Image 1: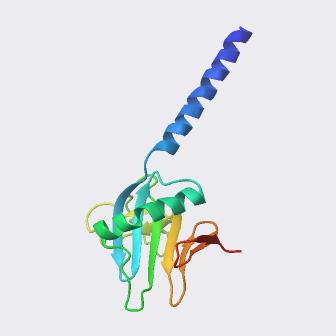
Image 2 (image 1 turned 135 degrees about the vertical axis):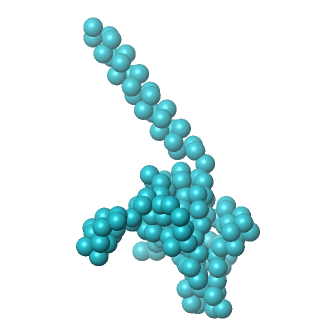
Image 3 (image 1 turned 45 degrees about the horizontal axis):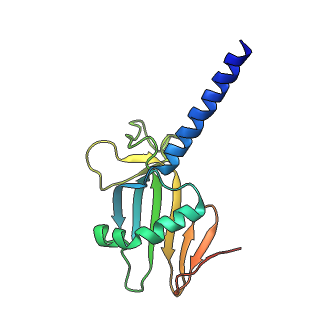
Amino acid sequence: MRITKKKLTFTLIVIVALSAIYRISLPAKIISVHQDSIFSDIVVKNFPITDSGKIKWWLDNQSDIENKYHIPHKDDKGRFAITFWSFGDGYKNISQEDIRLSTQTSDLKCFSDIKNGPNCIDKDRIMTVEKGLNGPITITTKKIYTISSSGKVKQEK
C-alpha cells in the first residue's frame, strides 16, 4: 500500500510539473488592441511571467506590433502609453445594476470601442510601456525599467 501512495504522489508531481512547463512554453498571443488618442490597450494571453521575459517579448515584438496595429500612436511630441492586460477569463458583461453603486465594476477594464456583447475584462495589468516628454522609454511591471536610446535596459531604484 505504501508503494502505491509513493507512486501516486510521484505521478501527481510529474503531472503538475508537465502542466507548468506546458503553460510556460505557450507563446504569447495578442487577443485585441484598443486605441484612444496616445493611449493603447493590448489584451494578451499567455504573456511571459518574469520581468525579463516581458521586456524581451516587448523588444522582440515591438516592430511587429507597430506594423500590424500602428502602435504606439505618438502625439506630436513623441509621447505614448501602451498598457498590456491579461485576457484572464475573457470578456465579461458589465453588471446591469446601477454601476455607481456597484463594487463589481471597479475591478473591470471596459473598452468603449466594443459595441456589441461583452466588452470588459478583469483589471489585471501586466505591463506598461510609456514615453514621456524628453525622457526614455519606461517599462513598468512591478518594477520600473528604462530603455536608453542605445537600447540598454536598466532597472530603476
